[in-house]
Amino acid sequence: MINGADTAFILAAAGLVLLMTPGLALFYAGMVRSKNVLGTIMQSFVLISLVSLEWVYVGYTMSFGPDISGIIGDLSWAGLRGVTNAPSAIYATTIPQSVFMIYQCMFAVITPALIAGAFAERVRFPAFVMFSLLWALLVYNPVCHWIWGSGGWLAKLGVLDFAGGLVVHATCGAAALAAVLVIGPRKGHGQTNFMPHNLPMTMLGTGLLWFGWFGFNGGSALAANEVAATAFVATHLAGMSGMAMWTLMEWIKLGKPTTLGAASGAIAGLATITPAAGFVGPNGAIVIGFIAGVVCYIAVNLKSRFKFDDSLDVVGIHGVGGVTGTILLAVFASKAVNPAGVDGLLAGSSAQLWPQMLGVGVVCLYAFVVSWIILKVTDKIMGLRISEEAEHQGLDYTEHSETAYN
Amino acid sequence: MKKIEAIIKPFKLDEVKDALNGIGIKGMTMSEVKGYGRQKGHTEIYRGAEYVVDFIPKIKLEIIVEDEQVDQVIDTIVKMARTGKIGDGKIFVLPVERVIRVRTGETGSEAV
Image (cartoon, rainbow over all chains, first blue to last red; front, side, top):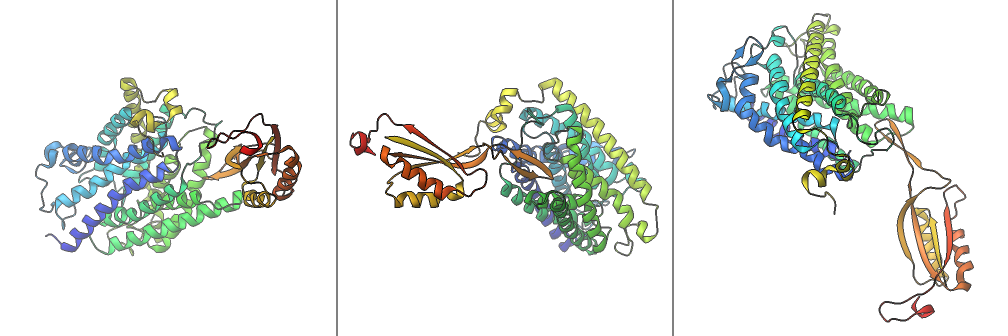
């Protein structure tokens, strides 16, 4: 039975999640140098088109179509065959399946866009397109099926991921790490300062991401109900406590609270609460946000020790945040908050720890290995990196024949 | 005739300009420049990492004056731009060979 309130809510949530991709584009673009603004924006923006097409023709059926041994959906829903305004018998049974499909599409769009922050300012556009498309097909769709698809093997083992701590943030974090290793640092990394060219743009992007995140996490209840309320509140509280903690850490360690720190802390808190949002109460969410602020701050500052040029900190914020939140779910979850959920450590049960750790291990390893292979293959076929001269000139001109500021 | 080039701290520009107007200097050219000297650079913080920025913003003033005005202009700039802290800037005095006003074609002191 279709429920009008649920349908309206998920349609609105889908719009909110879509907004996160342009939001991400601005978030990232503010942090690069002025010669790479448009190239960076394009690496988020174009995926709205590219991945949506992929989703309609194969992505949706690979992720949510009839299960083949827990591994992948078959192709019987390719091109949205049979996906109509009638509700699905399995997923979100109170809304048209078309609404569920388009809502999930927005998640598929933003996930590869997140990875692009790791290799900002140095990858050729055609190679970026090929990588993102292969990645959506071979990493996002299978992992999405394992955890959210009916019959998915990780779901069967009890792995929980409310809104994408594993499916979105851990996969993109692991892929980002592979990309940093395969593609290598920007020219002059370690000697030159790559300073953000426009932090107000990054702040605007942070605001849009935060706003969209209510649809991302709140909408993952797939109905306008108590779980949506729980997730909405938890999302906000973790974002704000992440911001507070990161800002405080900087203030204490370096003497000044920074705007980029506030934004980074908020995104860290939001990414970390994502897997747990519908399972934890407000107090748990606040503590998860505080932990995110500490853990992600440390992770971001570790990269210089490894000499990794994860340019916009995809690993440190999204990867580490997604993994941390997935584990913390097993600590802070409570059936008193969500009767359909689980009890975590603080509610007296350690049973959820193992599935969560298994989920983290499997998803990160799979995403890392497959991303590595896709990157190597893409590099062989067309070359991932722009030339040294082009890197000096910037992506805006060399890849798109445009200039951001005239 | 001399050209006086003064590198000063940006926040001192208005005071210096007003004081120069006060002693009868009728025109000047200003540029926003970046550089470093003994002050070295400064540190900025991005995501917990400290970045050393070598070139820091300064203002460069260019003023063309008669020889006899040079000392008065230098004294005025020094007086107004000085904070006593490192990084207050420098003043250079250069000879000027010719001056031409584009609108009228006048030359020399008439053209300044």
